[in-house]
Length: 199
Image (cartoon, rainbow, N blue to C red; front, side, top):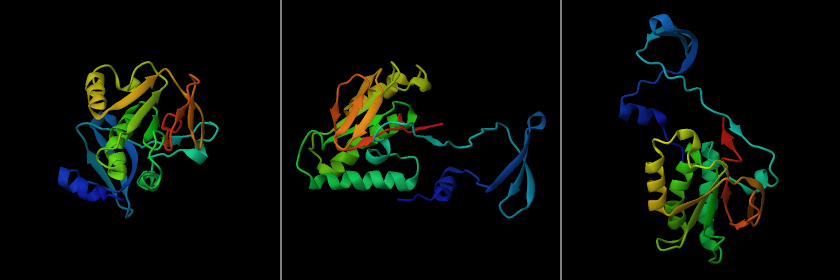
């Protein structure tokens, strides 16, 4: 399941240099770096994008470690994919056909948008699948702003993804999760980046 980023970079015209940036000279639009082989270089830039990555935050929620999945790392995404594939071996039920994505930010939206096709790949093209996003804020994609929201809503609706706003996951067990609203959602796969969000 590992994708070669070098192939993607080559196809999109991105030049990749492995190394460590030592200094950023804003006044002259240059960065000093040490390459992986130890050589030093300076690079000029027109615009600098500082993308240092993120670290997954896993809050103290009962059952989170035992009963949820993340897509933060390739091996974690592979574990979720394997989990979904074995759904076909279980008896048909609403719980089997339901995935809850905790967190309606960028990662949660992206994950939820992928779930209907992945569930149908495992369960059959005509399977009645349910994908539900649980989001604490009053809007889907709260940190993405109002501008892209209509497009996000239209895309999620076209995929049949549902969402509940103003709710948080308080606990997870083998049968599902309990949102703060006290309305239990029974599932056989919960995947929370609201419970495991990037920061």
